[in-house]
Amino acid sequence: MRIRGRAWVDGQDREPARVEVEVLDTVSSGLGLVARIHKGSTVHFRRRKVNSEVWLPAEARIEASGRVALLRRVRVNEAIACFDYRKFSADAQIVSFGPTKEPQ
Image (cartoon, rainbow, N blue to C red; front, side, top):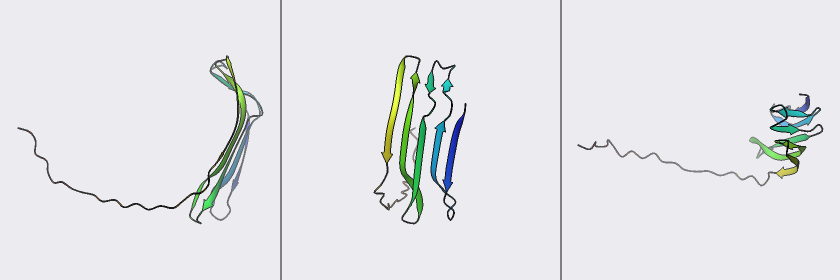
């Protein structure tokens, strides 16, 4: 199995900001009977710092082709964008009801 990957790390926070992975040779599972991912398939992930506090997903792109169970060809070209993050707060309260009585 040969794959190539690259990662970009934010110099100040030392957090991964971007990752790219490419399949260089066809990848098989179960001797190719269960699944197969074809050469040239790629995955890209991006993260960004939100509110100058936390790193969260920003984008994911998948471009892949393969086979499932030797019968079905699969082609995926998917892009997912994450945005409009909002900060929220919640209150919690612990309530104790005291000891419980066991049935007699």
